[in-house]
Amino acid sequence: MKFAKLTASTLAIASVASVAAARDNVQVAGSSTVLPYASIVAEAFGENFDFPTPVVESGGSSAGLKRFCQGVGTEHTDIANASRAIRESEIAACAENGVTDIIEVRIGYDGIVFASQLNGPAYTAFTQADLFNALAPKVMVDGALVDNPHTKWSDFNADLPAEDILAFIPGTKHGTREVFEEKVIAVGCEETGAMAAMIAGGMSEDDAEDACLAVMSDGRAVDIDGDYTETLASIDANANGIGVFGLAFYENNTDKLKVATMAGVAPSTETISTGEYPVSRPLYFYVKKAHIGVIPGLKEYAEFFVSDEIAGPDGPLAAYGLVSDPELAATQQMIADEQVMGEGM
Image 1 (tube, helix red, strand yellow):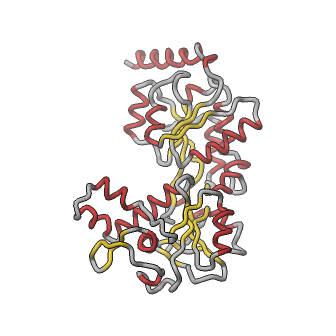
Image 2 (tube, helix red, strand yellow):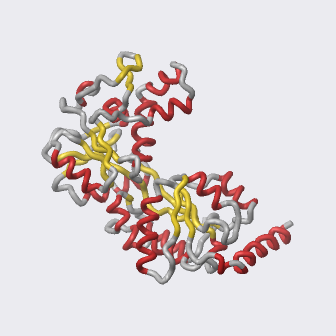
Image 3 (cartoon, rainbow, N blue to C red):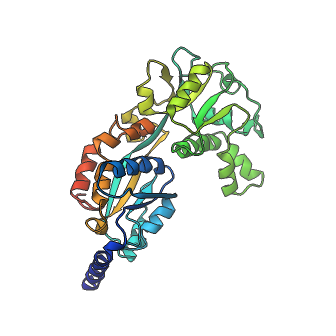
């Protein structure tokens, strides 16, 4: 059986080589959260290397990994972007289709902070429940799910300032909207009992999960689809506002902004990379090793993506919101060595 598997793998790789001329650009698909980062890298790669600009598509982590696992050959994608780690079931599906050597690349962390004017109201400590109570269309009041009556932060938490609620949040097109929804609003919905009340009221669990992610459109929550300079300008113009920023952007603007803790944890590279700070998660892409040396520029693209100039704390990805990985050097070496999952463990 081992011989049969080896033969199948060898044939698959030979098949890639025989039709290599059919494609000369790297093809990437997957997470919508990783998409803006990958797009920045792909554009810069095309401008700085003698390879075609990689084609980057979205579709979600699960869909991207499903495509990635369909087989080896130029008709299949080279890289899957993911806002979560690949699952054992997906690794098994890959193996069934001959995709046995996978390089896992952690590009950094999706971490967002909540900041306000340096000399503005004392927004220094929030919980996920606070943000949900401030921004959700329906909230729990006296044990009942009702239309949100809150207009000031102090209406539901006496420790917060008696200031009008105004939050500048990532727009639906922004790469950090998903982590804002999943790690803040959804958690707050569950913690306050709103999700349980929705289900008790007749909603399916899936419908309740979707309803939990809704935010009001009456001016209390303002979507920002641009970069963090737009959010900063909005904070500058609204003393009572709070804004959502990437950690690196905040750290570069501590002369203008003060940051709040979330659930008692202050954001930092350390607390985000360890997972202690709750509004964060690691981001990945997965490389099909069998395509390295066959698809022009594949390894070079992967190395460029995690280079200090691109994924480091002063690079363009950090400027867009990515929290740089403290172990970036180890990731760079792993790609250089083409180390696949399971090796060196």
